[in-house]
Length: 307
Image (cartoon, rainbow, N blue to C red; front, side, top):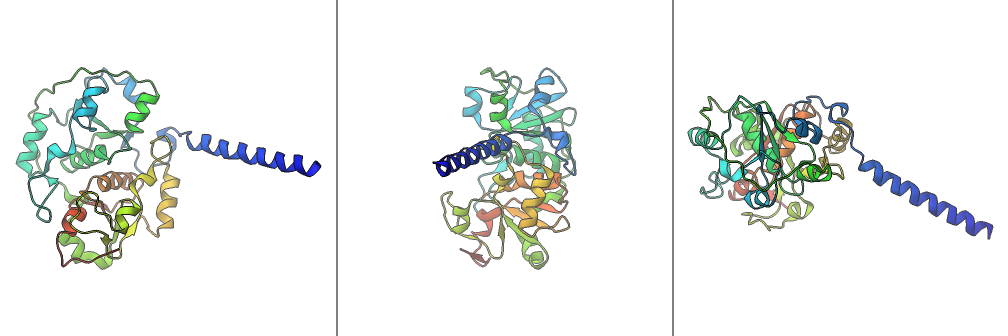
C-alpha cells in the first residue's frame, strides 16, 4: 500500500508540473523585457488600446475583407497583401511579387498610407503572416514607423478589446514612394549566384517540405540543400512572439548564426516575409525574404529541388 501511495503521489506531482509548464508557456513577458536586438517592430494590445483614438496611429486589418466585415478593431481599415501584389503574372515570371513602384504608390494613396503616422498591422497568427508581409513591403518603401500587433487578432479578443462592424473608409493620401530599398529582398538570380555563401531557409510546414502541393505549387519538395524552420516556431502558445533568447536557441539548433546571410522562402513570400522581420528584430541583419519563393523556383525546371 505504501508503494501505491508513493506511486500515486509521483503521478500527481508529474501532472502538476505538466500543467504548470503549460501555464508558464502561456505567460508572455512584456515586449520591452524580451531582449530583442531591435525593439522597434512589435506593439502590445495595451499600447493599441491606449492609442485607439490617436489620429497619429493608422490601423490596418490584414485578415481579409470577410473577417474584417464580421468584426474588427475600431478605426482600422481593411487591406490585404494581395492588393499590393501582381497576381496576374504567371508563376515563374513575377507572380505575387510587389507591384512596380508607380502602381504601388497609387495603391498606397488609395488606402491612405503615408509617412505621417505610426502604421500598425494586425492579422491572425493562425493565418499566413499577412501582417508581416505588408510591414515588410512598407519598410522597403521607406515607411519604417510600421508595427505589428503582438499576438494579433486573438490577443485583442482575449484582452476584450473593443470591436465594431462599422467599416472605416480611408482618406486618400498624396504619399509618393521615392525608392524601394531591396536590402530585405532576395531574388532567384541572386540566390543562384550566391548559393554557396548563403543559407536558404524554408519556413513552410513539414508536409510542404516533403513534397505536398496543396497550394498549387509548380513542383513539390524544397530547394536543394535548404534547411527548414517553420515560421510559426517563433510564436508562443498565445500567438505572441517568443523572446530573443528563445529565437536564438531555435536558430542555434539549426546552425544559423547572426552573421549569416539568410534567404527565407515559403510559397509566395508571405510567411517568409513575417519571419524575415522577426529575424531582423532579433539581430539577424542579413535576413532577406525570397518573395518569389517556390512559385518561381519550382516553375523553373532547371533549378534544383529535392524531397
